[in-house]
Length: 199
Ligand SMILES: [Zn+2]
Image 1: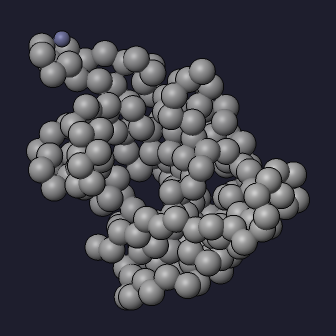
Image 2: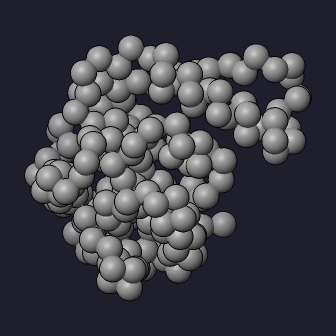
């Protein structure tokens, strides 16, 4: 697996990117540079974690990737996130971008002290949305503080936590996507995130 995090700079003068048109051009240029100028080597998948919503960046990515295989929609279970994600689904459909399915993130929390399960962001919203939209539910990933710790350490969470509830949920998501592979024309994925926290 290759992981690539890069910083790109816009060649425009400082402060000239603040209006929407210039901002779109800057974003386009940097995304194009990232996709075209990186020596990716052979890839099984290219996963682009795109910012929340339906703004310029997801649009640029969808247009610049060429023939993306599809979008994986990530939502948290609460109503605010679900309404955002409904717009993402419409956005993908307006671009004729196939939607691989929906992941319900932050779906329940297992207390590390007593094992009690609580639902700080409600639960089941992503599942209900998948049913309502006629889309596949790829999995429900619970909150786990170890995900934060692994991310901060730059380590894939599943390497050391495959047997945890969240680790098993990640495996379920991965298997769901791999199982769809035959239906997907090219091995490229675009991921659109929803807001991960409430205001
Ligand atoms: Zn507890």
